Structure formats: C-alpha cells, structure tokens
Amino acid sequence: MLRAARASAWGNGMLKVLREPDEMHAAVDAWRGAGRTIGFVPTMGALHEGHFALIERARTECDITVVSIYVNPLQFGPSEDFARYPRPIEADLAACESLGVDLVLHPPEAVMNPPGYATFVNVERLSVPLEGERRPDHFRGVATIVTKLLNLARPHRAYFGQKDAQQAIIVGRLVADLNVGTEVVCCPTIRAADGLAKSSRNVYLDADQRRQAPALYRGLQEALARFEAGERRAGNLRDAARAPIEASAALRLDYVAAVDPADMTVWPDDAEVGNRALLAVAAYAGATRLIDNQMLPADAPLL
Ligand code: AMP
Image 1: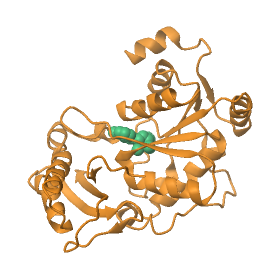
Image 2: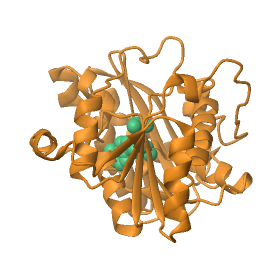
Image 3: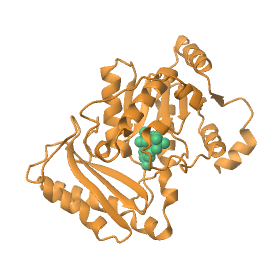
Image 4: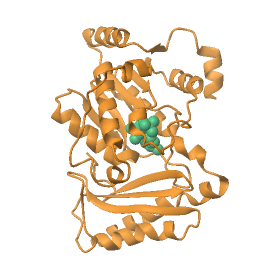
C-alpha cells in the first residue's frame, strides 16, 4: 500500500528530503519563525509500524513533522551489523510521504562525521549497565548523533520508542543536562500480533527464530502478572521473565535485569523492586540481538 502511494504521489513536492545543515536550518527556522511547532522522529530507516506510530504521534501533536534517516556507524560495535543493516531508502521515503511527513533529514557521512570531527557526548552512569555493558561505546554513539540531529532539526518535541528504553532515558537526560530545549516524548512499543516487538532487525530472523522470538514478550508478561499478584523480589521477577527464553532452543539469553528507570540502578536478586521498575531483557537468535522491556506496573511512565 505504501509503495503504491509513493508511485502516485511522490514528486509532487509535498515531502522534502534535505542533506545539508544550512538547508535544514533554513527550513526549520522558517517554520519556527512562523510560530509552527516541530515534531522530530530520529530513525535509522528500514521503517516499520513502530516508527510509523512515532510519526503519527508527532503529526497529531505538532504542526510540522520531521523524520531523520541515518544509519549511525558510531553506535555499532566493530563486530555488529552496520554493513548489512537494511537501507530501503526508497520505501522509507514512500512511507514518510504517505504518512504526511513534511521533511526528511537524510544527512551524508560528510555532514555527520566529517574529517577532523572530535566531539562526543557521553551520558555518564545511565550508559553503564545493560546495553552499555554489552555494547561498549554504543550509547556514546547514540548520544552524540542524537545531539547533532537535535541541533539540525531544532524540534519542539522529539519522539522516541519505549522499545529502546535505556536509549530514551539517556536522551531525556542529555536533553535536560545540555538545555537542548526539546521535550522528549516516549511512545509505547508496537508489537506484532504474537507480541514480538517490531524491529528493523526482525528481517534477519529465519522462520524458526521468528516463531520462537515472542518468548521475550511472554517472559515479560509473566513477570508483569507476578508483579500484579504482589511479587516484588527482583530475582523472582527475573526468573519469570527468563524462563520462556531459556525454554526456546533458538534463543540465547543475554540478560534480564530489573532496574530503576530514574537512575538505571540494577536491583540485586534479593532486593525488592520499587514501585516503578523497568524489566529489561536481551537475547540472541543466532547472530541477531533482540531487546524488549516492560514497565512494572504496566501503566508507570518510563520518563
Ligand atoms: P531505530 O530506527 O531502530 O533507531 O529506531 C528509531 C526510533 O523508533 C527509536 O526511538 C526506537 O525506540 C523507535 N522504535 C523502534 N522500534 C519500535 C517499536 N517496535 N515500537 C515503538 N518504537 C520503536
């Protein structure tokens, strides 16, 4: 449907794609000067329903919707999937156009990481556990590029997915610490019918891995059910979340952790979680890394 929409509508001037900072600033400053609010959705492309939900939220809450598409090499480790990360730019632009996006920022490497580039943003403490521990420099890469993108888009609001909960927390912190002047909005995780969180990386899964991948979601739901029944012991909540993953031959558990989303402190197994906890999980299906999480209680805000 999205491809058909592009074939008929692309080229009518509704969607602008900009690659140079001066052009981006001219566009967003003109909108700001006219008193229009700018909503910004940073992405690495290979857009799916999770991204679409962020875009739709931005469209609902802001006058102008800006999406960035940039596969950020700084956030990939040397043995990770940067080279093979999907880059279906034509389909992504078609999707943006049919969703009513006003501007796509698609900066080249020469803009994001020019010769002589030397400035990095490191959000201390919050970047240390969980994904930070497994993926050294990942959040330094995310924080640096998100800061640059916010400086390019100058948005009133920026939309991030709960799916990448630690990332949303880190971005919230850097925006506050550096007085960026953007409101960070965290949006719910969008899932397939069987519970698997939508991800650009799901295309890597073979049929068996795809069938077993919802074990992450099932484990989190089991832990949530225990929490709702009164369980507070971190170790017991972790055990509930890990059981379906460990029972899935195609999956290899990386971690399950109960953390305080205010400061990313990990609760030890024998501690009781607070009244707002983030249960985060990571597992491998072959070489593909899957992450997911659940707030406890379910209606507690992440940020
Ligand atoms: P990415 O392109 O993977 O860097 O993701 C761009 C944004 O989309 C991030 O804020 C992600 O958290 C968000 N996102 C990715 N997958 C989902 C999902 N299934 N539901 C909601 N947001 C998502």
